[in-house]
Length: 312
Ligand SMILES: Nc1ncnc2c1ncn2[C@@H]1O[C@H](COP(=O)(O)OP(=O)(O)OP(=O)(O)O)[C@@H](O)[C@H]1O
Image (tube, rainbow, N blue to C red; front, side, top):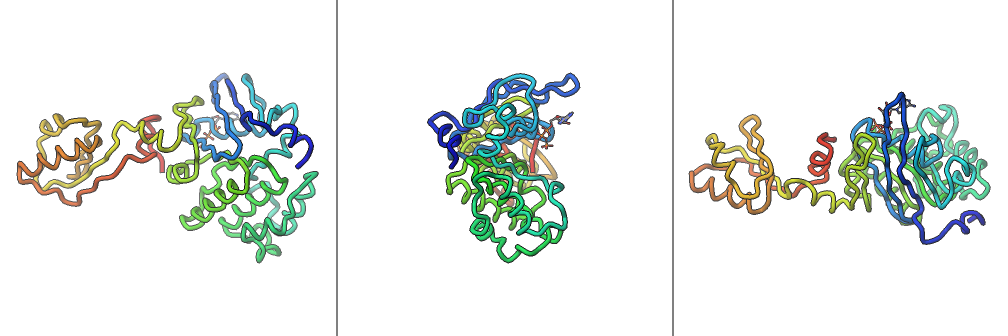
């Protein structure tokens, strides 16, 4: 660790964003964002397309200059103290930033040379399962291998925090799950993670806290469980009734949050009380519920209620 890094280490949050604003063509795409990230956290930024997520994290990285507000990384200004922040914060590269002919070994050696106190790339390559790919050119790597290389390059400067923006987009489910494990390993090794994602399951599984961003503002900031508890319905029930249901009878159900009919299937949002009342109603009318499913609300449901936008 460098002197600057140890001097900056303390009890204050590792990342502090306060009143951040960024305007393009007269439109505030980031409009007064405030959040903090504690050392050791996986902090998620979730939001619909165009919500301002990348703009916000690029202000944290010092790649964009805020129009208003304050950003600090370990107490440093990412724009004014850019060189020092670069040693503390590792950013995931975009694919186009690597030469297709560069081998994995060359990329690791090249990026290690950028830092005053780099990690030894050999154990890093081992940890990221790249050792048998060291001689492979970037263009020949699979999507998952490229992502593992990007994580290695983000970690090569021994950063205290890594910013991962849409890291698993385009990966198949298996490679995505492998990458999740790697992100957890990164955090377990003591590195704080700022994660921008579109994937609800990813955010729910990995993040300690999540800021849901909508139209440049924070719609909610909480733990995954806290966000889920904000969904209008805590329980979702769906079934195909053997005969069509009386709409009026459904409307009178206790704690009912939503009703939807689609292709003969009924989906109800509510609580356990709603579910029990539906079962009683069906039994009373001798109606069978085919393919009955009852599930707890998910982050997806909460996201939909908070932003009005469904996600993958
Ligand atoms: N350099 C720029 N010049 C003009 N407008 C920009 C610029 N960068 C971003 N924008 C606009 O700002 C808005 C927010 O973009 P941003 O990339 O931050 O959103 P995002 O939440 O990361 O979206 P996505 O999930 O689609 O990546 C968008 O409407 C985008 O078109």
